[in-house]
Amino acid sequence: MTKILLQGGNVLDPAHGSLLLRHDVLIENDRIIDVSATPIDAPNASDMQRINVTGKTVMPGLIDCHVHVLASLANLGANALQPGSLTSIRALPIVEAMLNRGFTTVRDAGGADWGLAQAIAIGLVPGPRIFPSGKALSQTGGHGDFRPRSDVLEPCSCAFRAGAIARVADGVDAVRLAAREEIQKGATQIKIMASGGVASPTDPIGNTQYSEDEIRAIVAEAEAAQTYVMAHAYTGRAISRAVRCGVRTIEHGNLVDADAARVMHEHGAFVVPTLVTYDSLARDGARLGLPMDSVAKIESVRQAGRDSLKIYAEHGVQMGFGSDLLGEMHQDQSQEFVIRAEILGNLEAIRSATSIAAAILQRDGELGTVRAGARADLIVVDGNPLDDIQLLAGQGEHLSLVMQGGYVHRSTLRTLNTR
Image (cartoon, rainbow, N blue to C red; front, side, top):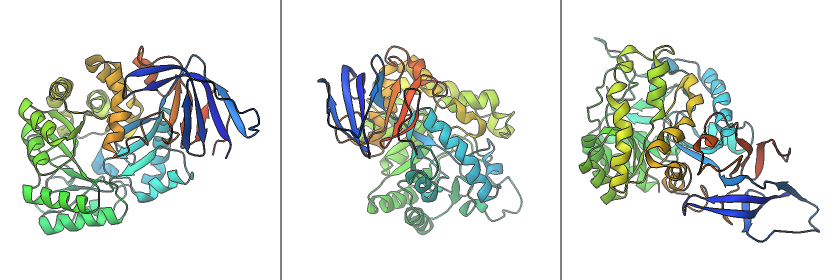
């Protein structure tokens, strides 16, 4: 493959919060092989393509740690009723738009499977690298159970329909089997529902879900497979309970309290707030088919989510970037940067989607960084996002190049070996 040289740009190192002025970045195949303050020159390298990025910022490709790429409808119950083929086809513009916004990697928190991840990995369709969770695990009546209240509880379709983000499993033996099955099918981590939620119809947000024995059994299966458990949880009670049982990342966490944040810090747990989804749901949820019971829950967590960032920061809990958007609201993905920057500053917002996100994915040094040996997942920004976070917002209008694994997905600078 042709070598690519990005010449003269300012390289952003999120982990250290530094901007390396006028550095060259050399890419070969899918890796960065050199980052140098001294101009890299290989006059005899006829296969090298040079791109002048002077005055622009070269930074790691962005990572979203909480997406649902198969959620083309805001009503997740209705989403689960779609034919599998329609669900998959509707996901294609969703994942391509994410890549256009500079998200070269995502962790899917329920729905996406190994097949879709492979289709992207082999270049069949454009999209971010996917770390799939398969179907999230939910107890009966939990956040992943989208059956309406009824005097007769019909069997749950969530175990087999592509559009369902979760499957229902109850009891220690059943959840062990469910975790093993998701891992066998290609899940790179296991997602569980450990509290009530907004989008589900019958579970108040304050509920805890799954017994501690069930959670510990799921954690044990994940650890046996050399991976970890991520848990949907809102309240301090649900968060502390999940983390003490071995859960590694908390999703949302809007109603955290100081005690729960201390527990997270003591156990080295991460949190993935998803603030933009509440703004989007409040604005568009009802219009796009979100059930009214769910619409009514939004305000109970919306402002609390913003307040939670300060609690996590005060207690040293590392925060990854998440969006958790549904349907047409996927277009708001990058607005999460703006919300976080207002509270934590631009650098912390960027770290959440680069170095911290890479640590969550257990890919430190490989993703979320611009250094020799890392994957060549890069974006080139028209300006300095440390000064103006809006450069990372929108639909990628301020990105002049998006590279994933050494391939240029799109560029306004030059057209290079795209696939």
